[in-house]
Image 1: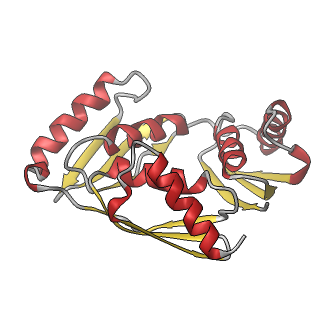
Image 2: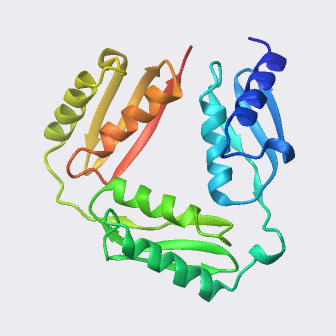
Length: 216
């Protein structure tokens, strides 16, 4: 697929996604590598734009350089943003009470501890939807008992085999002190994300080194 065709497909997908206003988004392509530039009205929209681009066949990576530009009344005091975010985190049953947040000039830093990666992901998702937040730094630490490396590796490989979207034979897993490394080839970003989710779900995993390559 040519760069022009890929740009056209990504633009069509951005236009098709009702969560994204593509009017101020510029797309460029270089051998499957997509770059998004321009402005969006919220951090959530910036993240949705990247997901939309990754859904397009032929995209092997997305460099998301979109800037969040708040319009007029959307710019808010840091204390107000933090208050709203803490309230939203408290009301979400997936986010543990050990998670805290700091806000500085619209930039939120998530701190504290959690036991699972999905809890960190949920906190980021909640934060991205709060009006006034420009970007997020996730410094939540995962605290979990570290099982044997062999147990982690075997449980992840078993999860790959159970997942209809994954070809376990094309992926390699190693584990050391809670850090899991996944390498190999996947056929889509959807498959890539499924593999990451399976790895993070293994007990004791505190970090995942993603070396997977999307190959069409």
